[in-house]
Image (cartoon, rainbow over the protein chains, first blue to last red):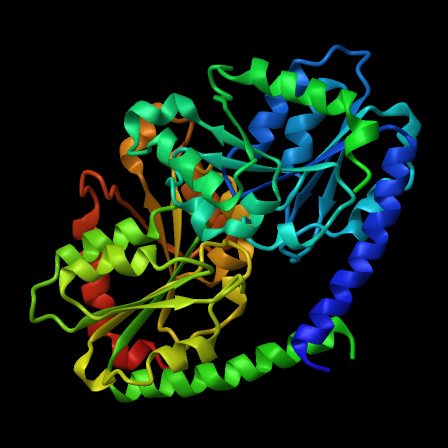
Length: 223
Length: 223
């Protein structure tokens, strides 16, 4: 069997499990977002700022993926919401089976929002459907405006691009317009929100986006 | 055949081709460095600054890998040295066969140094030997000090870590000491050079490292 055929088989098995997850999320009217970016783009900082903005009674949880270490889970567990680390032990992405296993002992009926923080990798994670409602691409302004053109699959499949670290704009050569145009060349309908996890700038728009997506979960998320 | 067995077969075929490449590089006394990092860590900027420092008669060349676009090759071809783009068309890493194909019409006897700029990905490229003398991990100070712990394979196999974008240190929370310690936890003998491609700081040490590695190519690089 060729490598490509084997890869196809692995992916179609993933699709099957992802469809089960999607059905389960839908059944529980739970909104799930899958965050994808390079290492160091600020996914964990974004989630820290996001969790800090929820009220204690909000029904939100996080699964966070890493090849090694449970740093993320430790950073995120201080907010009082359920957080679980998935350590992939070498794999460069999360797959649907890992999500299924991690959710085994969680009651999804008790959750409204589930964030999945994928392994830091702008290439591989996008090929693995996790049953999520939306993929979100996070790009920081220190990485260069060309990334949507160089890693098009992630930006094509993401419904939202978070442009992070905008507090660093005065110190780097980075054109917001060019980055936006590059993202829209790949995916004309992509939504774009600029944020800084250091200053909190843009978090109002990000929270509105979450609120809107949450409200539309029943109509939008059963792909 | 299981996926792991298939992956093993792909990797051992890669080892075979990489050994041929290594023998060919050694035969030509050519020094080859394989640069690995996240997207946007500054591999291309590092190479721009590096090529700018060579004299026109220096015998240096670059292979640069990307999933899509030939932006890198266009940025690097203005220095008068041979540059070739490898577009992987989806693959998340360069493999030895891609290098072999790209070098087919180049006379390695006419080169002293070959830089290979890998696909921007801190996970997968390290599994693919390209016959290089040294792997070099590039980490920028905007990415966080924890990356060597979270992506240990790359920092374990790299002989040198370039800490890039140190001109941004005043504007980000990043401890050079912690980053160095984390890299040395994974790989106690790793060399570390701090640079800024914007100010040129640290390029003297990086050039000395290249010079030393070049001089030792016959004794060090036939693994």
